Image (tube, rainbow, N blue to C red; front, top):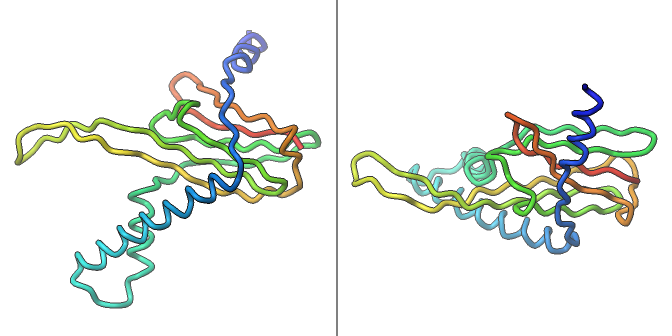
Length: 164
């Protein structure tokens, strides 16, 4: 029974789009600008005052790029990166780049949020993003890399990369 479910899980792996590193590096630059703008808003919201720039940056980064659990494992045949992504990102919302010693995972998802409270109830569109650069412990061959998203019941989507 377990062998059957493992085969079914393998068959449920959905390929994730591989992009060149320069595209995702430009995305990182865009995210850094967004974080810098938000950190400055936090600085202004406190009425200025020096000495909290790192706190403002970290707060802004957490607001724009929520953290997620991940692990990196190496075997004789593969390097596997597994990430438990927030809000069940789908494969079409993920982009991955693999370089000989680096893996970059990026994702963007549009959300509709219903706002209730003092103002009349309304729906806002918000964007949730993820971005991670992971240094790999060994050289991998990007041309032999396989990247897939695997959805497990009652768990978040995860991205996995393997191959050397």
